[in-house]
Image (cartoon, rainbow, N blue to C red; front, side, top):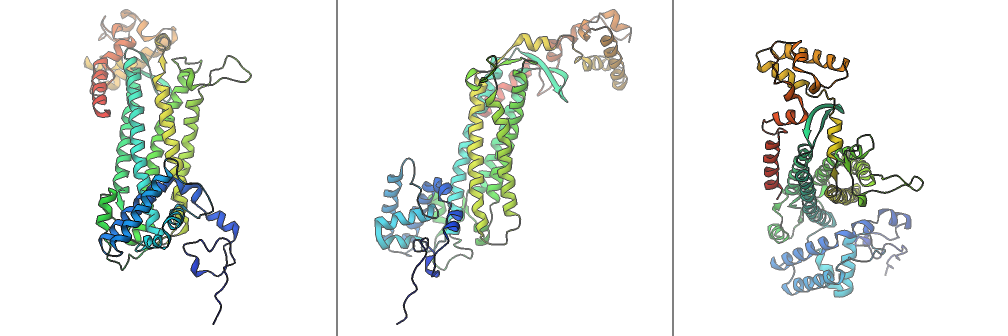
Length: 468
């Protein structure tokens, strides 16, 4: 009789795949490839998917109903035992091994039947999709809360007029509420992108097995229904090999962070002494260890900085995927840390943004002072002349000459008298100077989506109805 080879590796006997190997895995490789420290957060998803799988195995007769009931009871007990914080991190390779080891400790050999007709490949993909589906729901709620905070800030400051910018130069005055509403609609599109990503995430890979499907008479549709998936993935290779759904999730996070970073950049500028347009809530600022007068906008700065972190998560996953042959490759283990980090970071940034916005106060005196001696009504002069019949290009040129004249005399456009303005065109009447104040310029922008107060109030109402 030939002796069986001894299992000399400390990290082989407990492996789900250890039967093929006579020796052990190097300790360095075991540590290098272990994913339990980060994929342990999918413990609920793994157990939930396993319950659905066990129920299907029993319903189809692949295992007996008694065995299926035993597996389900064991998994439900494990789910309750690990609430609320999940399992301890130990030497197990991943969360799937951890669940099976815990189940085997409780049920004995029966636990081994759970893995019938599935592979870790489709199991991992299923858990990951379940986790990201929930992540989409969390993101949507956090985006909605940030929108509500923007709307509250806009409603509080409906009467604040401030310079609007292009090229970071004063362009035309706008209502501060109008400016804030721009971000409400940006976040609305972010919510649409998250919802779109969720639809494509919500397809079941379980049943694809390792890559080619299985010979067992499984019922994938039953599992999909139990887990709330909209349907099953049609191709077994695609089901286990692609992570485009994770890329799309990361892209949605990245675009959200672009918008938060832009908003925070403006908040940082507005809070600076050079602008001093807003007062930030102290709870979202810090001081200096050496300069007692400082009130640093650390919350906004960190959000601006963390955008690069999320972009890096997206680029990292794209790079990991770009050269992979079908089907599963271990490279795909890199998907989870990127997605988890992006989700955690984006959620944290959204929550800080919402809290910070609820405490911001605009300084009306400072925003009006920024508009004193302004030239940003130059377009009003051009529009006024065009309405009188002068071709707009000629009116534009004439308005530019008036700007140059006002600058040479140290005046703002609203400070010019009717007589001074008429030197440039007989079409100019006594009514023009009244149209050149910041408030009048804002009030004139009555087109749909414009910054006139009545349009902004309508926009606020539409946004409130959409945001919920």
